[in-house]
Amino acid sequence: MLFKITVLGDGGVGKTALTVQFTMSSFVETYDPTIEDCYRKQWVVDDQPCLLEVLDTAGQEEYTALRDQWIRDGEGFLIVYSITSRPTFERVERIVERVLRVKEDENQYPYSSYHQQSPYSHSPQHQHQQQQQHQQQQRRRTPIVIVGNKKDQYHSREVSTDEGASLARSLGCDFYEASAKTNSNVESGFKSLVRQIKVNKRGGGEQGVGGGSGSGIGGGRRKKQKCVIL
Image: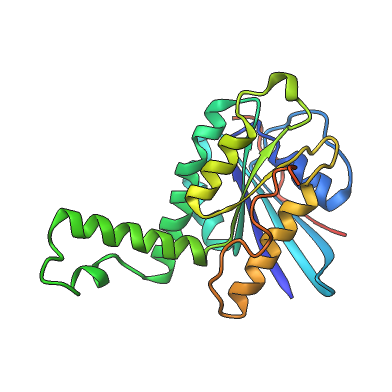
């Protein structure tokens, strides 16, 4: 069974390092801005063989036009920030909302279908409530895991574990703090995402099937696109 995972987040948060650590069991020391790289990995999750296709994407602002296509192509999303950079953390909610918007457009599931159900549907309060309800349903349907990377750099921390867990909980997403360098919680984040995608493929809608919060408490040159098959 094929699972398509898209890794999103700001530039420099360690998306490539996480992806390479997961797929190739090695750590990328140097920062080389990515445009779009595809990796493949054969894996076994819950005794079921899986083929993972992991798309590592650009975080730089000049490539945001490509992001919607990356989202459309993905079945599950690993959204990464760096615990050493508060601005990258503050971008997470906007990235999650963008994923939900693109997936909503793809599924042709407009808010207007709710607005016609009540004689009070045109009131701002009713529309806001229906919009919130719809977004919550979208979160349950769209597999998303939030990862706070670089937890080995605790001396430079700008975002606490509690803040990351609280944001993920408010967005209805699983959460992990990880370190691509020490390979801490890297597989856990991907495994949670695969489990959520499996639920969707079976037609379910549960969120957080990977075990909830797993934070460890418990503009450069263009790279040539490639697909690494392991």
